[in-house]
Image 1 (cartoon, rainbow, N blue to C red):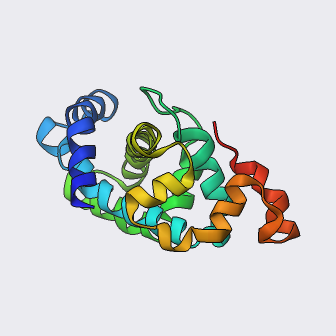
Image 2 (image 1 turned 180 degrees about the vertical axis):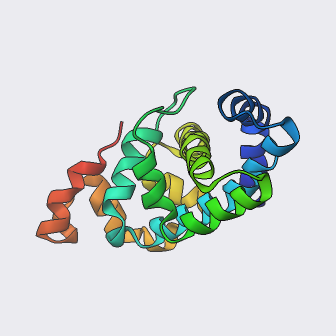
Length: 177
């Protein structure tokens, strides 16, 4: 996953630094600290969700519909709930760490997360779309989380009734773009 982290840093580094400076008034040396602080818990949380898809259906549906694409910019509104769902119990720790490291209040740290996390997800989704195919199985393979995606996620993505009647009916939620 180190190569993936490096890819994210290369793709977003200066963009995040500039954006955080403009939107939140962060000095460049402070803004440069955000992406390395945010990326690992995002990747870890996403990997956890992909390894246990039955426990994260809503989150994975949101990620599939918003980020498994080939767009240059991430969606800009309504991402706070998705960020909260993705980071879950890690949200407070990540926001607290950012707050302390950057000398900002917790509310500003959470707004920064709501800005940066979708950018990271967009890079991941675009890379999965371009290199692996635009579905959650491709994203899981990219993150090394394919073990839990096997039959259940494959069935959900394809709408197969093999996953049982309830899960089979939910399969349409994850249709390919």
